Image (cartoon, rainbow, N blue to C red; front, side):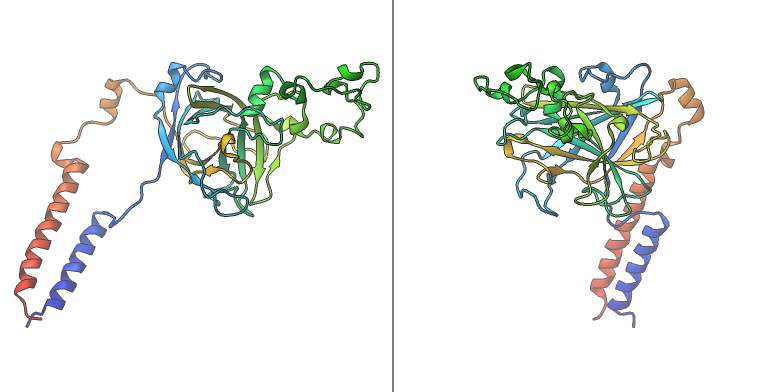
Length: 344
């Protein structure tokens, strides 16, 4: 006699065969994809209001607190950001926006922390660990800093924050200038070793508000040499929102730089720091990897119709999928009815 257990096994095998034949996953997770739209002309490297950005589809990227390794905060403030990307065949640009109630663009006082955002790209095939990569899986990072952006307008120092401060003499600067001596007057490398070594943090003038870095795991973050800093940036805070543009040539001769080739798929991850929340270093909000693809230039409608003729409605993917699910539903109902009538 045909028993329930045999019928149940048969139904499972039939459903599994149908799902396999028609490539219908039982469960799937759709990853985010950021498409860099192809545009014509110069990219808006310092204009977040340009109409060219509207040609790119915005992607909302969820963020969560980095809680894998110390130092971390269990509760960060920035929960998501919006990203767009455009490219013109020679350069690529990203526009990243997020809500932030406060503008923190100074790092002069020890109690101050800056707002910042970073993009991260794998340097090899595959996806290394999304937090700073891993050994054997280096990542290239573009780190925009709000204080560096402010320094491009007017450099901030102790005099900026404490306008009434008084110093008798800076003994290691130009003695003839005395208290009027500034950063540029420190010429003896014995007293300004960071500046003399090319440390970008000590540079009196920033060429860009973006620092180009490389990492291969926690604790390995290192800035590229000053001559290899080839990422440009621009950021503006307005009405509780940061809008930051990253830009660079698609190709780079630097071994520690990601090189973009239209037609290939890449990965990008994001990180944001909220200075008002004391976030710095590993205390930040991070994303998982997001797919990065390159869009092609739009073709005229007439050409598209010739290249891709319309299918009959009964051959469309949507109709075929609905039919398959209808068949599965009928099999389930019939099987359940027969199952209820069979002996244990």
